[in-house]
Amino acid sequence: MHSICHIEKCSACSACVNICPLNAISMQEDKDGFMYPAVDNTVCINCGKCTKVCPAENPYEKRDSIICYAARNDNSEDLAKSSSGGIFYSLAKHYVETGGHVFGAAFDSKWEVQHVKASSITELKALQGSKYIQSKIGNTFRETEELLKKGKNVLFSGTSCQIAGLMHFLGKEYENLLTVEIICHGVPSGKVWRDYLSENFSTDQIGNISFRDKRKGWTNFMVCINDTNGALLSGKKYTENIFFKGFLKNLYLRPSCHNCEAKQGKSGCDIAIGDFWGLEKHTSDFSDDKGVCAVICYTQKGKDALDKAKVIKQVFPYETLVERNSPIERSVKPHPKREIFFAEYSQPVSKRIADFTKVSFVQRVINKIKRIIKK
Image (cartoon, rainbow, N blue to C red; front, side):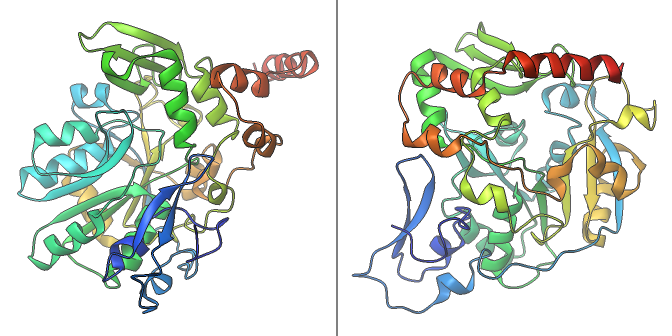
């Protein structure tokens, strides 16, 4: 199925799909639930454009930040609906209010995730909040390029590999483009997500999914699934939701996530945003458990955009941001039994995840001792 770069490197950024002049490349899912490019050799003319724009084959160099912040949206309502500090929404809101366009991740009718364009506040709402599923880029790189060439202002948000894919596809800098990288732990199998949903819910009854519900606070966020009337179907702390538990244990992340080529500013983004965990050790200004973002500006354009947005911010050293957010710089290690999990995959997947993430008695004792020492 895969022939553009080594399968262990492919991030499904879809730069190859978007660049192909004859549409000879399509994304197809493998047996483990991960998307990879497939080439139709009856159409392919071997122009080589797909390989040239592949960020896995042509990674950018590491970059240093120009300035870093702890920041949050200054609108309490927007902040409450955001996963952490609401900085993406503040930036994006400014863009659509001034006639620009925003690309980001949104749930579709089957509760899978697609990259879509938002040109109004109403459309932007669907992009708000974290989705711990890899979004399908589709033709949004082409859409972005068309808008940029028409002189339209565009904000494109995505994981580091998606931003790298976009920048390789464009092949040049655009002053009217702002790229916002979402600091990423990794992306899980789409198959595991679908199986988890189908065995626990009917997709027709689901009205909303929030991976980062803050009703019990930002540091103790919940994974909440509501029905079409707003009633809670499932609401558990993130450490107790079985799908999220497997995700955090790196049991079914994409292979390329364990050796990401786009971290440390190598995506080519203007701004990177994520959670500022551990901030309470350094300041009390933001320590109210409502959420705060770690913001890394890699370009002056990124800094200027943040200055225009309605946010409250404070400068912090880069090292402080990385202290409790290692995915900024390092890929996570795979679960030791990841290969077995997929080789012997079976349903119900919830039980299988529980079996593979079960903590032994000895480890529970060790964890308790660690918590006591920490206190």
